Image (cartoon, rainbow, N blue to C red):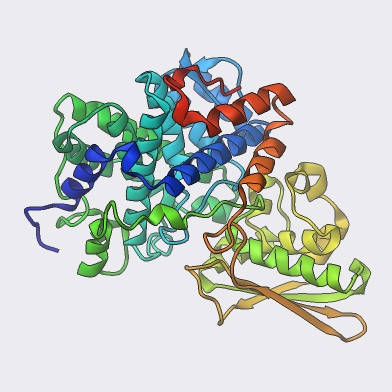
Length: 459
């Protein structure tokens, strides 16, 4: 990985600095508006939960400010608002996902776009161009790691997200390519986020992408004043992929970060979630609902459930088994394959209401969860798709099975425009009045016609 005259950071910086709204394909601009809408809706739904209240109270200790936290009354300082909004967008595991990049890019890029966009009094077109540019870079940077960040113990969204945040914030503030290249080097020093939260039921998985957004904004402000960062944060001797991966990154992987920029869009493959749970659980939930609905199975008719999923998901939703069998809050429930499958078998659904404290203590669900075992899905196409299979053994000896090979919400089975709007309204209505929810929906879907995004009300 020798240093080349045309560094990766310089190539990404030129791409983002010169990206124009009108040069982005029309279909991609439409997709960007839907992902922005979806992210704000998820943040609104998150604002109802205890972790959000405690995070907001903690950030208020730094004092008030002039920037909106989604769904919250009162305002925070710019960086604190971006941090809070990142926690909210990623708060209930319902935000968009890149299976290619193995990250949740909007959890970092949307808070930056909204916060810096408001600060700069940017137009909606400028916000969308910055958002698409940052998302494209983040997905590509994540993809070059080939899924290696998680096995090394890192939260991929946390360690990758700052690079996308730099591009969003830098574009909105008008940094030139040299400043944007330097900002990437600066934000590299902030790359952080571990997977220990999944193993120990902590709340910090929500914090990781939010902190990377703060790191990105901070790096941009420093670079704008001439503060210098290393120009080879990716391919250097002590670069990102040498430090954060256990495997040696291949030259072709590094080349893929910049190959086809502006012509081939990784943003196109970004998925929107139809269920509020870790994506590894989605095919298992859907396959379980298919079986119990098709055969009209009562819970009492079920002797055991065997699930199959990609090996990459074992340590995320299956282990440690004792911990996953007794989820005590929304986060631990979303990362328990046992709870998700048992809930799907018993209630034939998985909604946010099924993740509330009262629902988590349902003895029938917990008993059925103990009847779930897991194995590797050897037919999986992961990471291209999140796949899974379920086999239910009945008390009368039947073995009933189903599988899902293309996850709902992926680019090959996308949510429709109407489904995204419906999801937004379902997430928003517990927090906003119908008229406020509709007004916010319309403002976000028509953001390319907004002259100053600071006027969009997010609560």
